[in-house]
Amino acid sequence: MERYLKQIRFSGVGEEGQRRLLSSKVLIAGMGALGTHLANALARAGVGHLLLADRDYVEKSNLQRQVLYDEDDVERTMPKAIAAKKKLQSINSEINIEAVVADLGWSNLEPLLEGVDLVVDGSDNFDLRFLLNDACVRSAIPWIYGGVTGAHGMAMVVLPEQGPCLRCLMPNPPAPGTIPTCDTAGILGPAIQMVTAFQSVEAIKVLTGRVQDLSRGLFSVDLWTNRYDLIDLSEARRTDCPACSLREFPFLEGKEEMQVIALCGSNSVQITPARGAKLRLDDIAERLKVLGKVQQNPYLLKVSIEQMEIILFGDGRAMIKGTQDPLAAKAFYTRYVGT
Amino acid sequence: MGDHLNGYGTSEQFVLNEAALKQNITVFIKLFATFRDKRFMTQHMDFPVRSTVREVLKAIEIPEEEVAICMVNGRSKEIDHELADGDTLSLFPPVGGG
Image (cartoon, each protein chain N blue to C red):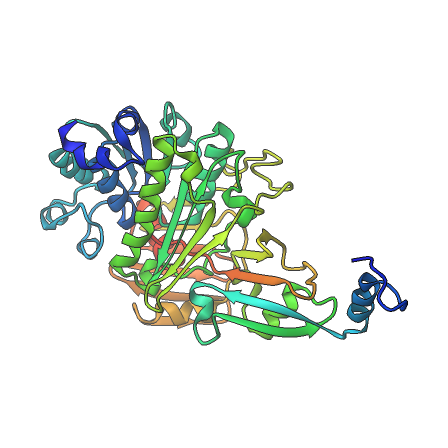
């Protein structure tokens, strides 16, 4: 316990709290900027069992904010979950860390939740967050949402049955193309640190059983204009919430999943979002023009970014050219169109 | 409430009559994250009685589909929710990166 002496001395944790942390299991869903900060905090705090899940590999543009990776990981194209596990075990060899290199979806999420006490959100898209909400509400597992774009951040704790869930606040996921993403709006490292500080301390409270000390609000921060808000959510649980009141879980049943199909012989992948959308192509073109030359007509826009080309139609459907890998195409769509 | 005021009726009736005479409602609008860009952080604005969130969005030029969270007095509401005098309306875009 020597490693945790200073944390044990803090009255909110104590020896009993530390023992609880050491016997806890947490799933970190997504190991990008949010996920690496969360994993770093929880591994050092002594959460006994961490599951790190991510579909991606380390790229140079990640190093500005994704705190567990280095140039060697970029050089070797290491999967993020593997690189993070290696780094974290060198920080804390006494805890159990599992790397899951996978695209979390309705078909593979539930087995991963076996024995999990808490899920923390390290994702970069709302498709996954709505899936996490369905799964956690159904199995009564607490989860902690976090999101950042630019210098803005938001976070909230979802305690199933005891407060609002994500769908109490957002009945439906945002339409594709309406969301500024890190790749179009940019992202500041310290905004990630603010949001993950909130998520990590709330995680420690959940795991040590200090439910009475949990934040019952929606944390919202804008670091560039110095605004810090905690919006009271004590009245926010909805009696008509599709998830936590009506117990409908369409995301978990695969009814709300993006369709991603590699097209034979054309080195391209077609993406069809779960819901048809009416995109504002002008707005999306405006956001993407900083990344590459955008060609546009009333029906679609086309832009090349790095080695790939996206042709995005007004209904949200897209053709991604330059790859046959559905996962790479999906990641590309999430980064530049947003889901 | 309910005490007689100079024999002209109760204070409760007085309040109701005043509301009925009012042509406008005042809504306290709080914007978050990117919605603040080129707009404001908080502002009191007047709208005709029976206005919904939709009318507010039109007035401040926020496309409906860009609203992720819409709360009236701390409760999540739909875009067609009818606002009342004195309501606090909080609007958030999706904050989804990470």
